Amino acid sequence: MTQTERLIVFTRYPQPGKAKTRLIPALGAVGAAALQRQMTEHTLRQVAEWVDRSVQSNPLQSVEIWFAGTDAPDLDRQRMQDWLGSQWAYRSQPSGDLGERMAQAFRSAFAAGMERVVIIGTDCPGIDANLLAQAFQLLQEHDVVLGPATDGGYYLIGLSRFTTDLFTGIAWSTAEVLHQTVAIATQKGLDIAALNPLTDIDRPEDLPVWEAVCHPSPVLSVIIPVLNEANTIQTVLRNLRLNAVGQSESIEVIVVDGGSQDDTIPLAQASGATVISGETGRANQMNAGAAIATGRVLLFLHADTYLPPGFVSLIQQTLNQPQVVAGAFELRIDGSEPGLRWVERGVNWRSKHCQLPYGDQAIFLTANTFHQLGEFPILPIMEDFIFIRRLQKLGKIAIVPAPVTTSARRWQKLGILQTTLINQLAIVAYFSGISPERIARWYRRSEK
Image: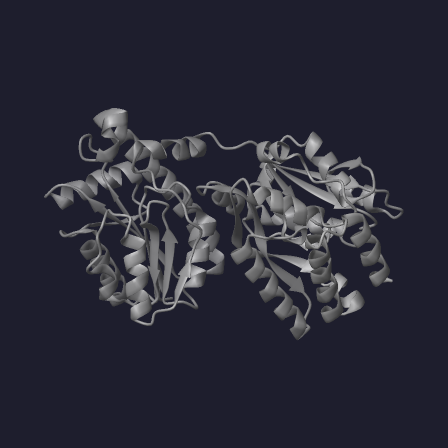
């Protein structure tokens, strides 16, 4: 079969004095070169995982390492192979600025018959197998995919068709790289997709990001409040373990029961979750779960909601972004009614542009931030809305561009239009000064 996708990795041999030169004042020439070596090896471990996962689902992929070195490329190629192994194809980077070198790499790949090509460097430890898979998936529907770097550049660029203009007239190594690239792509009528922003390790102030990778965060605590969820709880827990994608060992799952009269508790225990009982009420239950959680990060999940593949890495990447204090996922509703698609669009627009996700979008944040904020307010309704409003005062609430899938049962019970109107009226009532207790009584009457 003919290969159609290629990943190109730009790196260089870790020679002291020539590798990671901007870090030499902080690490010394030898230390900076050692960091170059470690980051390259880290990146290729993620690449190898991506390749291993893709063998069965998409065997039409190839990887090339384009290296920078001296004027003796044959010697450098041998040194690279001795260092990183013979499983990779190696090519020497041509002369010219970064744009000229990337243009040549893309040109070569498309000339070889590739349909989708992605270039990454080795300076961004946040790149993992899930992100690479996401980039190639996006290229099936978009012309360009970009991974924005927090310094104004990009850590990944992918193309489904070659465009030389994207690499000319760019002020490389400045904070204008991403902006200028997007402007050119837009002018050319190219369809652009964006990944989550990540941080490159270029300057001494970036080193804590690398330290966080070297010393992984403790477990993620998933807290699920339940009340008579025997029909869904085992499926939700099975999905959670499966979509942790090799990281289920680092997760603890805490199910907090609010007085179920069915088999919710034994079914959750049989699925390996820690089960505790709490006072009835979602706020009480979530706070009780957080009180015993050992994870650095807390994820609050509804009992009828399914997480996307690779959610652990997506959460870590999101919380590593500057100024981000919490996050949630986009929403997908498990139903075929056309009206549900409009609900999804409205929810995702509100979440992204107003930073107002709700509880069914799986809110996550660090345990420190949660306790600093004072936990969920003990209210009969809108505890997630008020909690998010408090979070907004601390920083940014990011929305992961991957959806959780939640049950359509709430919309099917009363009808899509009526359910949406009730939810919006509850918010209007809250801003009008009506107490949450009174809103809750009205809300319950409307559901009968």
